[in-house]
Image (cartoon, rainbow, N blue to C red; front, top):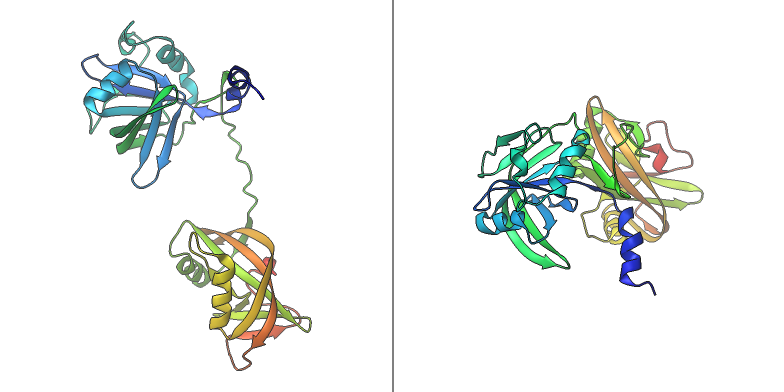
Length: 301
């Protein structure tokens, strides 16, 4: 078994983080420190966690219950070195000429650093000792960002830049009509990603399709977060007159549905199913030896 010093000497260098310039004000004066462990931990409310030591930054936060999070941009590595290289008990880092350009926060009495990728003003919600650090969680009360700047990355003992080249998402782009986009957005309940289950049910070498407007598609149903996909799909099939045994997952299809400038990410989990009972008089479904030309999302088949 590895001892802790061996783990620390090797493992921690392989994490990659942004760097927060944490700004405070109080009896110990205005201060800035560099915090590698700065992260966004909640959407609603928007919460930001910072992990720091017992220091002037912590003393100011404990007194005022507010702090600024300034995510350093790629051209601010030298500022990070200064903020992280000296303590507020040694010098007033914000007073060094030609270094930190600041502006006054809107909601809290804290200097904010100019030129950052992101600036967030926070009010403390939680302070808790965590291992050899103190975790401070704050709720963002004001924020601004510069979409032309990229955050500075720290990993393996060095600062690095993000590549400007995006990694392809792997999603298949599918063009649909405005009416179809409206339908799928309704299915998604206006969520950022449509998550749905679809069934491939066959009999006598024919595949079951369901009518959707003027098109045919695999029987599918949106699935809410935490719900069982098989159960949701079985209930949907039953509602359209089909009793089937949903078996294994055949695959996942990740798509970007596009209509003009509108787009919607969609993730479909495809299940195979064995037909048990089919209500022949149900008008919304039909069996096809070959998918017709007006089949929507053919890549799901």
